[in-house]
Length: 451
Image 1 (tube, helix red, strand yellow):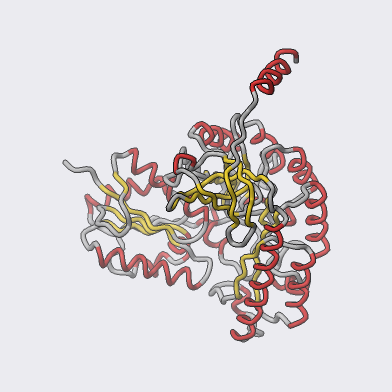
Image 2: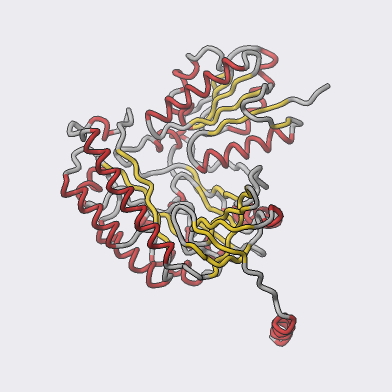
């Protein structure tokens, strides 16, 4: 009897990609083989996104394509769009199973149930009632170079432009022991870098007693063999003095932080219901740059939020320029049905939005270029992620993308490279061979035995 096959398609964020890997582990343990989404599989799983109306639309397109191409397969839909609009998805002829953003471990049981009963299954529950973190272990990743480690779920912020709390529920932190345990497991699998991720990553610990993000970072510092620790995203309000002190003391946390700003204007931030002022945001940047010279600060910006005046946009532009962010993800505000911002009457004209987006992208490109130029002739450590035509591409600790000539065997290893041509989006470099001198090794050994 031939083995059963499964194909996954993931839309959206790092968390969705992590959860797809977790679901794959479950099916793999039950004897499934994973195939490409374009192939004919026994089961198709579409992990959907709902962050924008476009996310919904893309999700529907992928679902319909899977059904059309594979009428005999079991089609299962999960993720954020499944959570927020289960009825709309169930109305698509050919969808067999739907689960939201919890109970993913039940998916395989539902597949077996569907095989027996041939009746559509709607397993979506009210996510707002969920108060505990759902354990989803990923011991290794199909894409082998950087490991993502999910540490929390949900968000309590309810920003006026965002639907995500309704898709993911309220803040739930993962058990610290489980986080550390999985980190060690990933390092033992050969990963040199771990990226901490979540729906509201920096909020980790807000629902725990006597434990917080700073403490988790301290505990992860002790993971034997871990070279690099990266926080995928952290809000300015969560960069407490304690967290900054931990970053300062750490040998593993990289000199790159992604801190979403969304707007550089206090009046816009208030309408967005963001939890910081620009004065506070600035204090965090100044503090970070003091402890970590050349730190890369990347950010997300929403342009053309309802009511955004030319002055408010200029405040954002000037703030980003003044503080030399190293790269921006710029989004024109798009109406997300079901959010307070969608009901605001002073929506901004699309042409004005596009003009502002282009201004910020140009600024971002020039800031990224000047950031890279600081590192000309410096030696950085990269972890090559892919090899193509004899060239390796990888990220340095400061998130600079560097291309070098090299062999595919170096993929996933730590490689020292000299930056020869700084640039954006990619700098060029050459591999520097660093040989450890026997004397140094002997001296280090003596140090250890004496102490």
